[in-house]
Length: 396
Image (cartoon, rainbow, N blue to C red):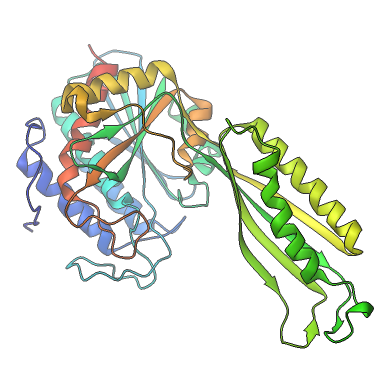
């Protein structure tokens, strides 16, 4: 099937037009059939089938639906891991693409379809060229969106079964034009935590507030006071965000409720800030409850840690990207994103680098937008980056 590419970026002759066409076909097929966390059975099956057709050793079912393809060349003992995420979002696609989602309420609004296609393209290219000395593990991970698929793969023995000296990943970035990349040592994506505060009082008639313990007033106090944790307790030079995103209480106009709930998220880049924020939140919740004569419970969940690139691996990745795109097209001074990424779990176990790949330009919308569509012009850029990175890290 011929796939419309709407042009391509010049200068990536190592990735042929046929390879680009195939990557676009795979990508658009994944887009048409999105699957969410730990349900990526069709996606994983197609990826495994393609990897085997390229001549790779393939293992499936890692971390439930994860796939790892292994390619060896020469006699070298060094190894590298390249990771792409497979899952889609629980989101209704509103665009009218010819390959729009056929699964209502699910769509590839974050570009993981493109991530998989680029890594598959690199796997086939490297399988044909084998211009490296060592072992490459192509890691296709489930459930990046909130459910911690990277952690599941690690708990299933990912790096014990497929040892790597370093691990690398990338994410498409609509804020950058096609032909540019961004990466830097240190934090590039922030950690995120979730919390829920449950308030319990004595409800009653709204005309008789003196006979109740009003959880709504306590709830309002907490909404305001919790904002002081970042503004008055966290060092201004340590970035952090505390956002209350859900406020639930009451059923009608003339009843003061007996219970209320607050939910939200905390973003940060260090465990010290995380510990401080949680401790202050618990103190505030406990003291407001005491002052208002109610009971309160706070659940605080650590979700994804900060995504922190290691220095040596990131320097090498920057050199590879600069050789492909030119030094001016590699941004090494962009601010970290307050978004989060569970590739962070892999970087806690092995050194490596997480990069942003430009897909901006044309009609490319922002990530998680209901009209988002991965820009296929970026496919040869991402694939070429993976190929050159392997050939550099595992140079004969």
